[in-house]
Length: 273
Image (cartoon, rainbow, N blue to C red):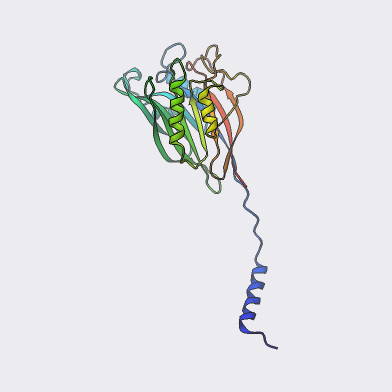
């Protein structure tokens, strides 16, 4: 008995589909980033007060970072003899950068910077709310990692207010949280938060989904000669389908390059199943 034409076609299609190779499920992407945060002190002064950008280049370069968050970065101010500090650091480290000016200062600008060895897909300056202190700004960059498929991660270089109480810090944190509300990429906050791990400022950020990378050993980063204050932090927040994990954080034992010691975090980037 001859099968109807439609039924014969369906049988042939089924046989073809069965003969196709079964492809394995895509493996989750996993890579590790080396993050360095460093407060340069007034545009680049050593602990003894002398300007020494070459020393700071060497200290950061020796850490072989993928992403760098700089605070107190000057652009073309008189106190750095007109030097574009973030551009100078980017050139010395073989990286690209974005800059966020917090305010005009000494004939130029003063603010934060974010550096990357990966292509920068997007960047912007986040002006933080002022509550009785000087203007503050965070620098945001979104970078494209060399993974297959490519993944994106956002780094935000942070410098919160240094007032006597933490009311201004809390206001800075609220402004930053609001600015990042619609960000879907995983976010790394790195910088000088001018507040301690148990502060209301860090509690606000924790409520917004950020987890602090806890340094191994002594977490004190300020002042550099005898560090006893924990105010430099790296915080992580997962993104759409991507998790960030602390793979090891430490305060770098350098007491000469600034009044803050650098903070280094290795961050594991994992796509979620």
